[in-house]
Length: 159
Image (cartoon, rainbow, N blue to C red; front, side, top):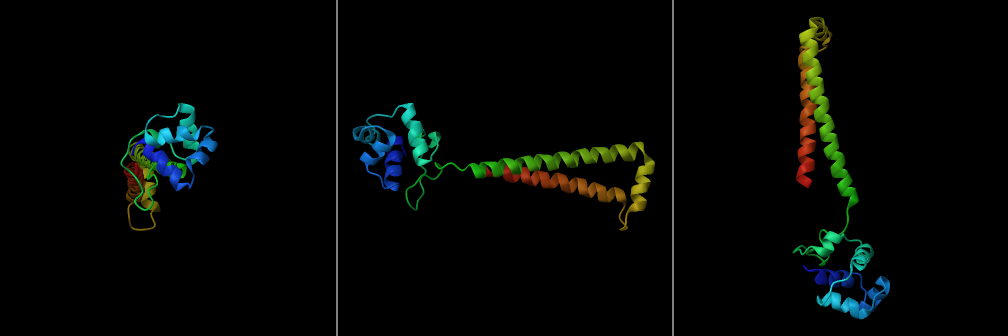
């Protein structure tokens, strides 16, 4: 869709006439007509006003796309969704934190078992289950890294 088609669709979806939109944007009805027919383009300040009025991004308005919502002809990706972006960033950050915790824990575990054999014996003796204490700690570290990797992959697939 071109800018002119998007503007027309947004105006119609909002139930506005060219005159009503012109009043909202402080321009003439003829200017709206020229923008919708593709005869001219609005100035940058008017593009920002259109973006704010219809709550769509400037990228959506300016980039030619083939995307529309099949149900009602409204923009598929034009409406801003800050909550979705924040969720993706939070998931990505959580994934990195889990991976770092797992890696740091593995390094510390390795250093402690190599440098301090008494620590390794203490872990082995303190295990309630018949598993070796080192094995339990190793399992927890690997689980943290796998959880982090899954969160990162999930966040990356949403982009």
